[in-house]
Length: 364
Image: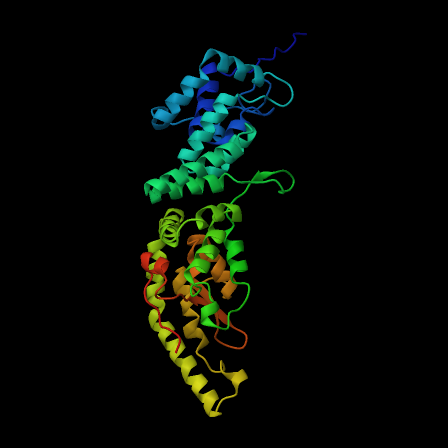
């Protein structure tokens, strides 16, 4: 009987080079690490095939191959010592030792593309994340000293978003913004008085709340809170625009709620007058309010209706679309069992003015 001959899988060196280079150029630490795993399609002892459709995302398009980032990455990958290191790891049993020079280039590319989570992981692998983070904070301070607010904000943002969560389970992970969760904490207590609402706080207190909410760590916020109020104000406005390029959409939606807000506050005024006259019990002041009409306010702010129609559900969705929006919102009862989220801020708040938020009906 003839013995069946097994054909050994061969992965062309060119394929290995361009797959690794693409991950580096993309600043994609997940794909980069995957390419070295035991079941990586680049390994000759793996049953996975890099040329199948499911792995097409690992190979560059013609346009990507012509990009400067890819060409630089490919040049480094092809360097004899780097290529030898890569191939040695692809034939190695056990955890691979990833090429540090490629990881550093990957991290820098990730930063330039705004992929801060990937950059954070890459710098952490190299054990230089904290040092890089501090360098970006220093760069931010230097840009502030020059009056370059936009550059300063970008440097501070990068530094903050390179933060790591060493308490994450089951292993440490990059810290990420959790605006939806933090927005609920920010509005966890119902404010009876307008001056207690975030948007009505004295300017320094408002700035402190804002930076602590928008930055990943209080110590990051403290760095800008040491500056003058004027610088903090300008910095916050730019920070909000950088985090949310579509902020103008939220400002437009706030404008659309103004007529309904006016009706709501006029109705509240009327009911309070009746309470003062003794014709309405104080604990019944919300009875008979047009709930359906005023439920339109959060729908307008979000741009659509959601279920459940609860203030916290709308707050989470709005915070996801416009992270800074909770700083200018408040909770309002419209019946004994129903409350909504609505715009509420001091018309003299310099941040609200700079963000083109419209004047709102004031306490009556």
